[in-house]
Image 1: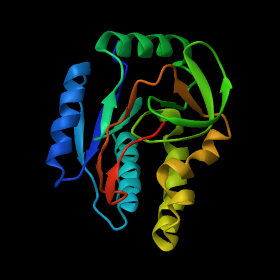
Image 2: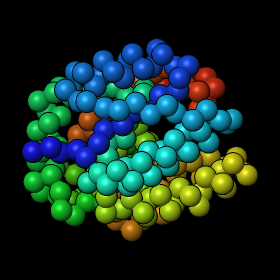
Image 3: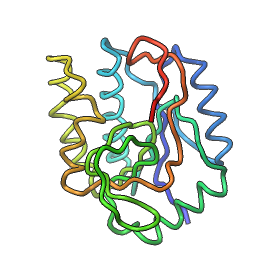
Length: 200
C-alpha cells in the first residue's frame, strides 16, 4: 500500500548543507521526496510560512490523497522498520478519519486517543507533518488569512504557520503519533538568524 500521495521537503537554495543532510535522512527511511525550493523572505519565518502554503496548494492541485511535508533540518529518531510499522498501523486505524498527523511536535495540550496517537489540542513544530486531502482547503485557508498578518505585524508567535494552525487543532483535527518519529536537528536557523537547538 502506498501510504503517501506525495512527500515534499523544503530547502532554501543556499542551504546545500541542509539539503545533503535531509536527503541522507530520507534515504535512511526509504522515502522518495520532491524538493521544494523554499521561498526566501525577511523575516525568515515569513518565507517558511509561504513555502508551507505553496506546498499545500501544490498537493491540492495535483489531487494527492495526502502530503507529507518535511523541513530540511529534520532528523529521524526511529529506524526504518519502526517508521513504516507505526505509520502502517496508523493508517489501518485512523486512515479514514484523520486531518493532520504530526510526526514531530511540541505538545502543549493533548487528549488521549489510543496507544498510537494523541489528539493535539495545542502543539507546534512543522518539521514533519502529514496532511490529508480532507483538510487541504481548511489549512490553506488558515495560511492565506495569517501569512499577510505575519508580514504586516511580524507577530510570529501568533501568525507563523505552526502557530496559526492552532485554530484547527482546537477543532480536534490534529493527531500526534507516539512516539515522536523525528525532531529538528541542531543547526543555524535562517528563520531565527542564529544557531538553534530544539529543546523539546
